[in-house]
Length: 430
Ligand code: PLP
Image (cartoon, rainbow, N blue to C red; front, side, top):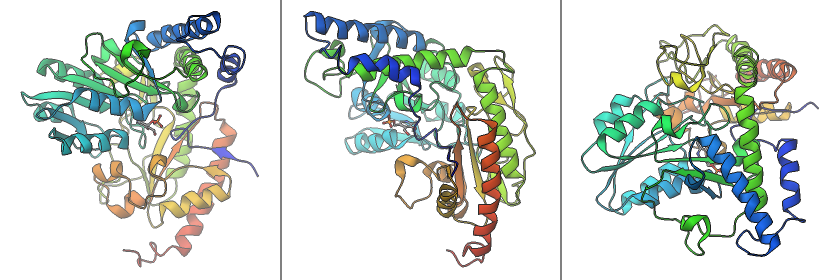
């Protein structure tokens, strides 16, 4: 059976070039980057080269790049490394659990935490961040792109607000990295973290940008690795893989014309998928101005409606990011759509599609096994039933038109079948 993987926001496969780049560092160049002999020096130079590649990816100095184990560690580092009892911390209710659980932990230890809610479209309004600021606000943390809806947040505006208030600003860029250009100077952030496995690199490795002079306490102590900012023998193959993935990501963000590059191509495929699914009755997009939060106003959005804007368009939202905007949708990364389906259970649809060879996710894959509806969709104002009946389709950058056509063949069949047998459709579900 054909298998089509449409869950790139959960994880991505290695690109062949990434595997090739990593290959020598498992067996031939296996040295410890801290050793002074030749084997150690080879490993050390590989880490140095990777650091330079990441510095280019972030637009920062080499010394501002710290390698770590991935997105969760980076998020935890920002929160535990900066906040102390008596501080005030602002974040949003749509962050990844790596932020939310860490925020709860510091709240138990005497940090005041404000969770800013999104608008029904999934966008965080910078004015709400401004309203939440207090004299004792030490840290503001807002994600670049939401993992469930793909909605891009106005980080540049939020960075200005944090700066004016004298607060540190952290960006979880795990889902934005590789999909939109990163620029820590323009974002005005002190901390920004990424994870390799979300951008065609290996699992268990990531990096955090730490602006020079930021008084960040290290989360993991031990040796003097990473200029004492993150102890532990460097994962050299992983770091090399991350750097290669970052280089390739930069190329695919720059390649071609706005009409012909990787991201516009991906956006067109996503739009085709979205439009095909929205042709079904009782469906809608979470992440559109007409999101699923107001059933009475919910409407089928005719697509494909997105257009590429590589620069400032004057449209609402983070127009600097090189994103895809239209009148119907708020800015989103090119590969993601989150769609609600009336009269069925999302989990049943995920399973039905999997049996037909299409891998998608309901809510966040990091919470798989949890029966609670997505906290992101609930925060956007969806009711529990609609949040449970929402699916995330996130395309790999290698996705083809044939993949999309296959999905468009199986999704309507599965939806129709489930609606026929669904207790939700029969009105018996709570
Ligand atoms: N932040 C966001 C927005 C994510 O989507 C994820 C993973 O899904 C993480 C953090 C955690 O990253 P990692 O899997 O590298 O720990």
